[in-house]
Image (cartoon, rainbow, N blue to C red; front, side, top):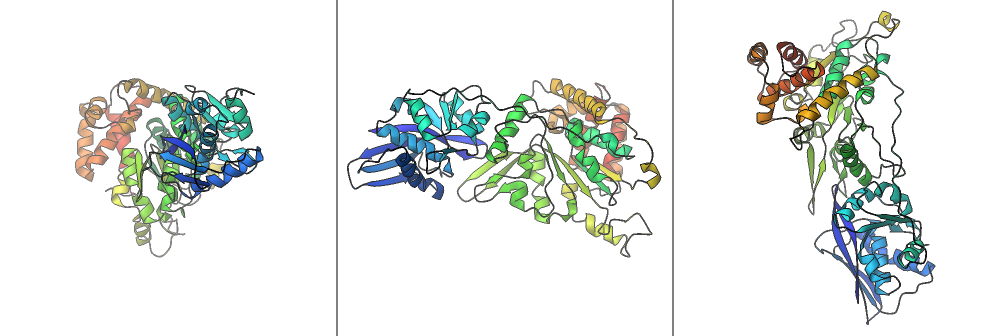
Length: 504
């Protein structure tokens, strides 16, 4: 008799269905697992055997063969323990074969039969729902998987509990989704004294998900401004929350199965490796750019990152996805994020201050910012110089709108964009628009077109730069509540593009 059950193999955020077949046949006693298992999967036979012994179930003196089909897909991870155990129990007629065949399962087994949570419960539940099967998983993974309402999730703390459920001795109740978690914001945009131009740039960037770079002397408030961006971003809608949580599930970042509606804010250190930023490693895990999907990636001390790391950002910024190529697999992760970079104007940091700058001015600044290549700088929609704040300004009362007021304007602008792109799948914000649709929605009036033409000729805007100015102008018009893009909107967009930083 060949018993069957199902589990998944992860390829990026995709969970591919894997059929687990188990046959118990006469022959020399052995327990073998075939179908391209990695070391963790091969070791499952010892965990399964010992866990069954803890339940007083002895394996027969026969040949046990487990096949993971399709056999040409690499099988990695300890989550194959539970489906292998269930297939074996069905082959031994301890649990009904029909019950395990109608389920997708995943989970790691401890030697005493406890079920240990594993990463990827959310995408596994999605795969089970698409295949019209229930999901069996460890108790600690149930709250996460239950967010997929299209399938029933049965979560157990021990293998024995799962067996009693499948045999009808002690049925388990379906798992309930974890709590929706909202991150409290103790910071406010009004905490930043001065820097009104930088605050305006942050508002525009948040409204259209435009990439922003801030350059200023140490202590001018660049990191402080960036840390307050999450306070003006709207919460994730249900679709975005599910997309983001699937990535975080694979990275093991979901806490107690709770899905957060707050947009991710990732801030890697400048010593981070390429695999940490872009993704990769032995199991091609998602990197910081994917963990920041639908949120913000803040890279402080931007020129200090390794040149190779910075250059790998160029394609993900344009396409919104990253392909991690390995000898045995090509894994794709989504990565539509808002890149916020901060940099000093030079190595010493005081290029504009004659009293404090080093003796290598201006060569110091050219060498330092020169670490950011022209093609990468060209991908920043907004470039802002953040001047130092005078000590006298620090004693003044807070000025400008607080985060709540700015967030309200950002939410209204994003609502306008959602309505505009309702009939365009894959396009959510102005930063996503390209081609004929961009010309349709962002072509300025005659005065605005004339201004943009003069600027393009005077400063040699690239085609990419030209289109990015149009996108930013469209976002400024949305913040202004205007259906058309006028000259003032173009002028403000151009002012953030043509700066002393660098024009490629």
